[in-house]
Image 1 (cartoon, rainbow, N blue to C red):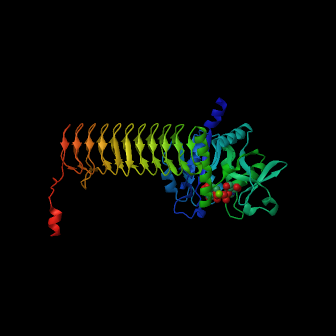
Image 2: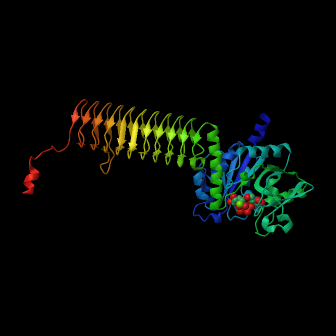
Image 3: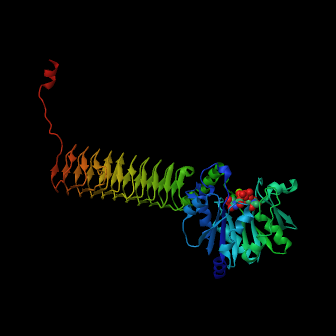
Length: 464
Ligand code: UD1
Ligand code: MG
């Protein structure tokens, strides 16, 4: 194990992401398109992280700023600019200055190949180092090799890689392809890269040409074959983005089901890679769980729900068509249908938030209920409070937001407005239809509405 770690500590990762991605037909850089809850390149950076690389260099060119901005600053992460883009060999050359004075292994990845498993990368590096190779190519056998570089072997050993556009009809019959993923020994790499030429069908400096150059110089070139060829699928079009999204979703959902989560329809459960879901929770169709969401055990998340960056404790029922973001829902609470829980809200244990109720930056205490048609914003609501249908906290005066406090056990009658800043004391009542503009003391009844007048016989008089 220790020996493995020593190899790892000298691993450097280079991720190519300078290309244009023309076939996406997008104003955004290809590697920032999202699949399985993350940008494509984020999947690659995470998989590379399993190698514990001392340096990760992303080669950027087309829309370099956008990619750099999206990845941000991280320990060990560097960027190299490739301008203009003259091919994959030329792209790797741009990483040279970051690796000067280092030794070890360079693992080359593409920013648009998001399905690669960390275990495959570990196998590649272990095979490469244990065989003392100068280069190791990750290859795959595929049904449709169209477009890929082909692995040309002599007496069983890899002799060259021929790009599809440069291949003879006989070479095009080869079904073993270059994944575009390699491990290289650092020492001979950059000198050899400079001897690659561009006399080929695309007039580019092809990185795979290194194989032939190494073999001619008597350096050891090895291959590792990936068992599941889908792992090396690259994204070049929207169609491929959707294909990769479906594969990532299946992987993620298989993991969740294995851990004890019921997915009623796995194909329509979209659960991000950083989401945690406890056992015996049931997730219905068309549910989106995003960001750093944590869902406890024994929850029921009904169809059409979207939860972002929120914590849902055990035994919570979220009924259909709710959106919950940046909030905490405590155990035994019931939400929805059709509730909107906006950031910084905290729904207490066994509390109920019913249909067409919106919370924003609001705490609803233990056992409290806001069952129908309410807006509760910037409010601190105690335990066992009843919020009647149609209650509105008027928290905004057009310039500033103001707080509402409703203490334990208070009862807010239906269709009341609480004009903030305002406080309703412990156990107090607000009469239905009130516009409360002053504090209601504990134990009092606040009535703030026009007094009713009944005019006896009025209808008969009107008729005359
Ligand atoms: C490449 C390989 C091919 C392999 C295939 C696997 C070459 C010449 N061919 O072909 O053997 O089967 O990948 O998917 O390497 N890039 C740059 N700068 C450049 C050119 C490309 O950063 O100047 C980046 C691209 O953004 C992309 C990656 O390198 O992330 C691969 O480039 P691409 O043009 O897609 O190569 P392929 O034609 O797919
Ligand atoms: Mg490609």
